[in-house]
Image (cartoon, rainbow, N blue to C red):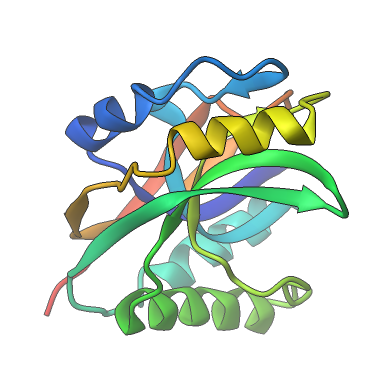
Length: 179
């Protein structure tokens, strides 16, 4: 079984800018810069045949390149317990359409629909035992941070192994965007 997901890569210069956010929050497990990405569709554990079908179906996606704009910092929580620090991504029509196409492809291949609403973001840290007040303080201190914009000219099919915090991720296939 291979754990798969589709995503947009973050360019090296942008990864470097985001990595400067690391530190100053007890209970944060910071994501390695090379693992920053914008998930389009988490697929999960798949057998080889299904993985091949997904890869082939994604090869038929024809979308033009677009510009991606990273926004401000935020926190995802379960109830009142924070679990991730994220950088929001502006949900442009091009991004939303690409993600929706990936969702349709996965469902057509018999996999279940994603149960959560799509919220584009880049995870910068996973939180375990971080006090909500400390998370609020860290966000207030870094509240003015705005991520840079960059051009997206491809999406990728990543594989990962089950691990704490995800990663390392391996590009299984890359799919260029073309007008």
